[in-house]
Length: 147
Image (tube, rainbow, N blue to C red; front, side, top):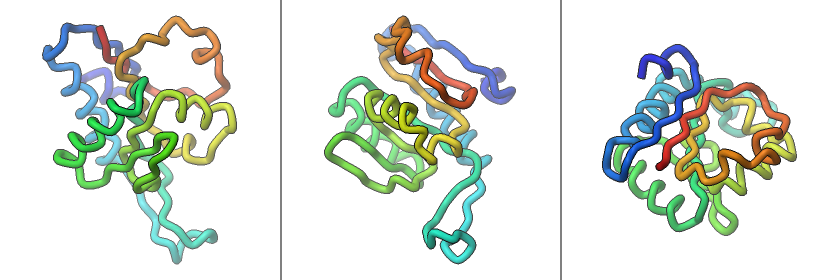
């Protein structure tokens, strides 16, 4: 938690049910605490937007993304999901998505990425994937959780 407060990246490797999700939830809560939102009348595009404080939670498969979306909706007020076939509240301060969607956003240089304070990678099977790790993106604190 100390390292997240300082904007550092953390890697959490622990057995199932050991509490990795607590670290992810702390990062999401911290990002929401820092969130600055502007209403549509202050945005030339006429939609809500944020300039800081967004958290992205990624998982390798849609089923896990859907489960985390349901779980986090019980804990946080402002949660959205982006998968290949579902888009619910893409303006939310906490976005759940597959790793593939995040990767695509990084390749395209999506505007959404500039608002991100934390990226949470669940099930980090791709941590040695040089193609993913070498993508051009702004330096973001990351929470890697998996075993």
